[in-house]
Image (tube, rainbow, N blue to C red; front, side, top):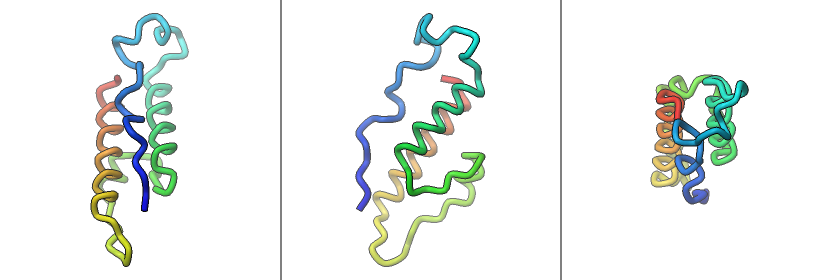
Length: 91
């Protein structure tokens, strides 16, 4: 059974309100997306996320096999949706 890491995504200090710490030349949209993607990969190490989260969301099929946990599948899917939305917003 997978365990959900409490609040790993969505509670990071990045984004528009982050202040001067993230306003340097290294803070790019691609850099932000890479950071969110890295967090997501850390939180869901067993998922094959691929290159594009939108593609992952389209082709995602919950594991319905023996011992499949529908609640854990839904949590994983929601975590990917949240990360995709953060990347789309840019914060």
